[in-house]
Structure formats: structure tokens, C-alpha cells
Length: 83
Image 1: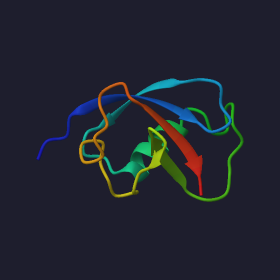
Image 2: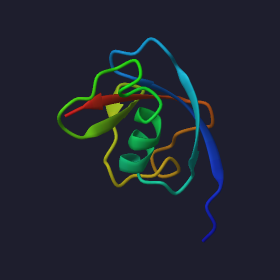
Image 3: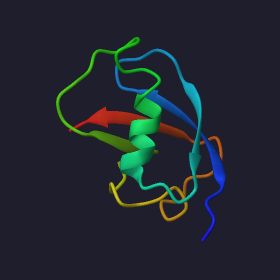
Image 4: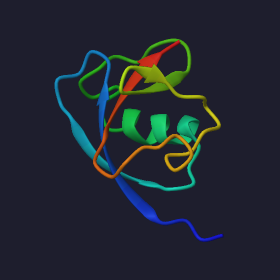
């Protein structure tokens, strides 16, 4: 199976910048969270304990879900929180 670039908007809890980030359509949410957090943590947001989690339309997504299986559309906003 070939992975395809998939653009999403991401915002890390406590940040004021909404980021445009390219992820792969088969990346699990654990990887999507890391890719989005990379651009904010230790730059505008302090590092936190715990694992980054992805929230989409108010619902926390399972770490093993992909953007495709979670029903995320291109350019949807994904919120990164820490558990």
C-alpha cells in the first residue's frame, strides 16, 4: 500500500498558531500528533508530560486510527492535547 500526503490543520493546546501540516494518509494518530506537535512544542509551547492525543470535532481519536479511518477530511483542524 502506498502512503499519500494528506494536508491537515493542527493546533497544539496552549498555542495560538494554527499550522498546516502534511501527514501521510495511513499515519496512525500517534504519529500525526507528533508531526503536528513538532512545530509548536519547545518553540511556542512548553514540553509537557504524557502522550500527545488528537481531537477532531470534539472527539478524541484512538492512537491507532488513521486520518482515513477516522473520517478526517483534507484541511480539517486537529487539536493536540496531552493525556
